[in-house]
Amino acid sequence: MKKVAVIVDWENIRKTIFEGAARKLCNRVDFNNVDNIINYILSFIKPGEEEVFRIFFYSALNDTDKENIIYQKASKLYEAISLKDYVSLREGKLVKRKKNNVEYYQQKQVDMLIGLDIALSFQKRKDTSKSKKESSQKS
Image 1 (tube, helix red, strand yellow):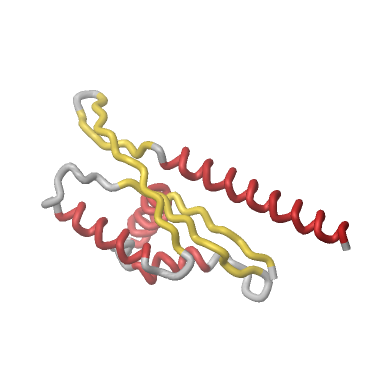
Image 2 (cartoon, one colour):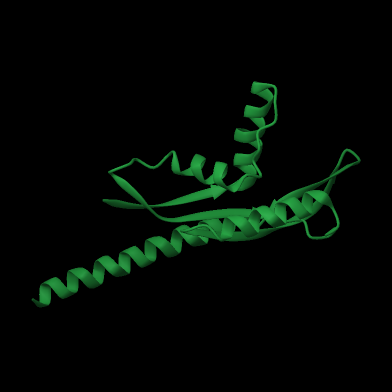
């Protein structure tokens, strides 16, 4: 069975999938339910052919206002998701930006963290393959 790693850019999924579905269905989709999120991610795994090695979950948390209800919900979500089997939570940073006199937050470092995890995974796989090949040649 093939082991797979799943890379989840949470803000991208939350905005395009969950919020898009909520608009299309004319109701709210509960993207704060950890089981819904994990089930959605696992729906891409082919039963009997693939098994999850790890789910890398990337996001960023605005910790400038810890009393904010959005921060509190997101913090609980990240804590709960990090406790799930096979999940590694990676957190970037949020940076305040301003465009046309409108302030907003932009996620930073998440793409870099994704790239590093991919590079390290390939390096580890390459090293493992190399050591297996060397040990089989010694036999």
